[in-house]
View 1 (tube, rainbow, N blue to C red):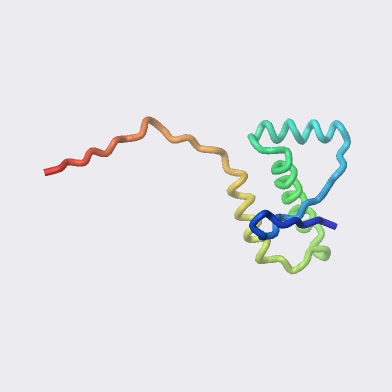
View 2: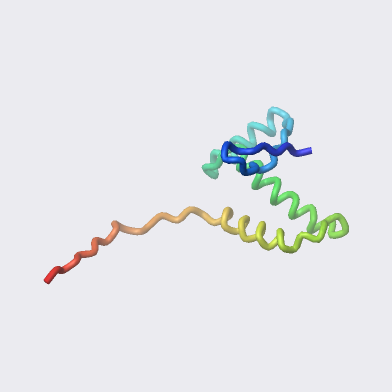
Length: 99
């Protein structure tokens, strides 16, 4: 069962789950996280989200009525999947003419 803690301001934190991974899988996860400039924890979360969505897609009888969550998670996954974009060129200066 996931544990939930409270922050210093009293708001509940996200649930935390402890997982034991084989050594080689842990290294592979760390490499993927580094390639995408993520923390290992965030990379694990993203991969778990994708795995759960795929699992539910392949086993519709097992998925619960979470249509409202799927749209939110789908939007979030789509945002996370986008490549980082850099601004092109130097920023333009705006001149203010005073009469």
